[in-house]
Image 1 (cartoon, rainbow, N blue to C red):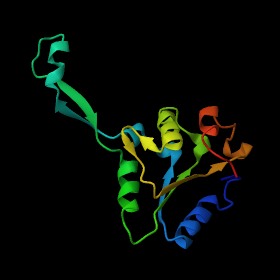
Image 2: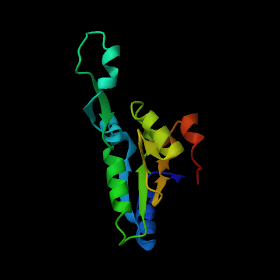
Image 3: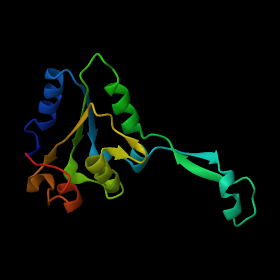
Image 4: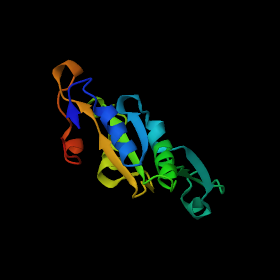
Length: 150
């Protein structure tokens, strides 16, 4: 949803979620950090990699990633059967941080972050300001190719 600042885009999305009996998650794109979208690295024994270890260390480890905060929160709410699902509202999409852009591409294009997918009961809706006074200077084509603009 695109429009001038202050016309009620986010408030309308929240009201829509209430009317459709959906949980509402509101996130601000410029405030998101890569860590919130990537998950946390953990280590697992990877003995099958010992022969590739240049340091002859027989305790090879591999990095595995936990689910991101966003996936965890959305999917946990999606499994709450007291509601019909989740409306994930991504606000200020026009002010994307370049460090988080690849995550947004994956989220919008494949509904996943890393190895974790969004539950099918999670709907993604974005809001952005499309005016010069809001600092709008267009949307990058990888994002534009993955969304419809109203």
